[in-house]
Image 1 (cartoon, rainbow, N blue to C red):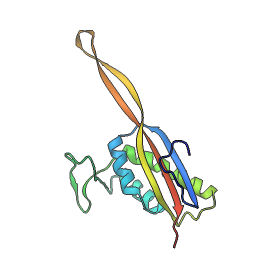
Image 2: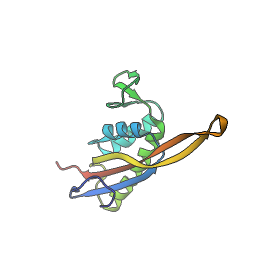
Image 3: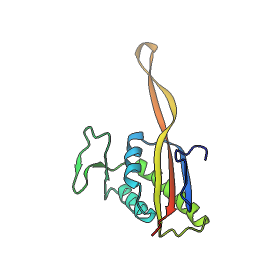
Image 4: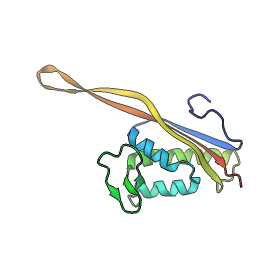
Length: 149
């Protein structure tokens, strides 16, 4: 499949991508790491709680000056990234229903965040010069499969 980082798909699967989301790459990596191997319903509920700032995402990378949260360790509430992941999970849920998968048993097999293109902008400075103001966009992908018992 063009654009996906996974090579071999599970037997009963559904896939979804979100291309060039305007979110932080560091937040996206931590959210994706947290959601891997979770049931789809549980992941969606947790992401909704992150958006409401009730539960934090535990961070495992990029921990410089990340505050400790009770019960989870270092973590944050990446609301913008959580909204992008919620849209991605809604998309993959619809794809799973279309493929007649049992959405109660669906588990996130693969989820990844990768760099997209860079938005190049300039900030005017004194004496007619300018400073770079670049923004990396993020590509998100998810593959879900029915859990085998």
